[in-house]
Length: 203
Length: 203
Image (cartoon, rainbow over all chains, first blue to last red; front, side, top):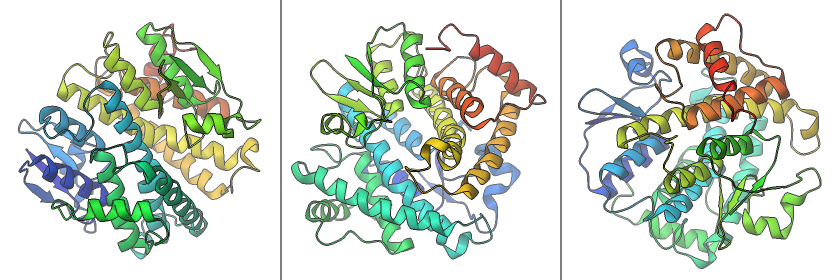
């Protein structure tokens, strides 16, 4: 088993943190997007969309989509549970995970894609879209701060994949587009201190 | 158990088709977005993001996110399986389901939101974004046509949640933004004939 990796990508990072939290040892193969390694025929056979990460199993079967890779690893390595303990708990973790993907990580990636220098010649950048998403991300942080008023982690009392995705979103927000958690969002800052001090946070 | 529903929404439709395929009988409660019923305090208690659908369990617990609702119903009503049969099969269905969400349904919704009359006063419309997504959707249809060359359904030999999401995306593409499957995409048209003739297709 090996993981085709794009080291700075928040999507690859969330899978690496998930793997580290599971205590698994899966070798990674870096794919250089800048030189087009993800557009070779060989790589497109692994993922026709040319995206990273991809988990390749020993028989050559390739699984893409970060959340799918996590789900497969959860099912084949149940402990520690990072996606819930029973049907309802798993549903609530999944709901929060998707919210972190669509309300936080996706808009932050869009800000980067539509304003970042490295994307200039790769996509049609729409600066207005970047601005709208900046406003949205701040409002989502305020919402998350209220949600965290009565619990330690995004989906409840346990650290889960929803926290992993949110923390990778915030790493990208700070490093790539200069958005930090405002200091007045006390609950969100306390959560950030909790998750970013975990031994796996830099996986 | 009841489902808070937005009848014309592709997200609500995919959950209704999923429920019909499972043979379940879950009452629906229509929520009128145009009159702001989804922004009342009572509804925001069910889903703070004000979106539909939401599955409310008998004890009042609310599950939002269409794919999460399907997952919960799959786990609590395993037959017929619509999300795969074992860990690897479930991963591959999930991967294809996410591809149908992000490569097809999301861009089609964006075209609608950024060009539709009903969204004019609700969001900052960016016509350029709508245009870019139109081009992308056509290219994704061509890709899907190639993928369907050697199989009956999106994720393999079985009808799954990935087909349900794709068919709801195409219903919206045709009805709301005037995009039809080009006639030369023979595999995709054959797939469309297969899925749209199922008895549940109008759920």
